[in-house]
Length: 126
Image 1: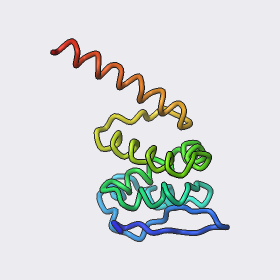
Image 2: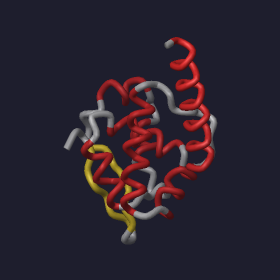
Image 3: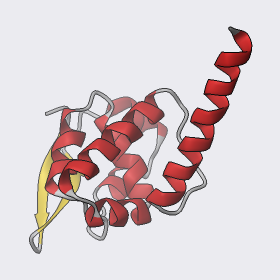
């Protein structure tokens, strides 16, 4: 499962590392402590989505750094949380993710602004 596994803490799900996150862990010395935080919990559906992503460790690190985003994911419908995690993964992959957000609503607003700018540029360029 790409170096990640399910961890259970008081009935809530969190992400812990087992290794295999080499490059990302080398770039971020705090990787294990950020991803293994016991106070950052996400729904099982979001957890399983992260485990299936090619950039799952990167998504885990982002969520670990932004506990408010994790809290927002926990309040979502499980299906919506999984979709949101996939959107975050795509944005991280394309280096489009806003770094200065404190919750999921701000993240979505920033991504919507980015999409509007991208579509406007497409229309201008043909």
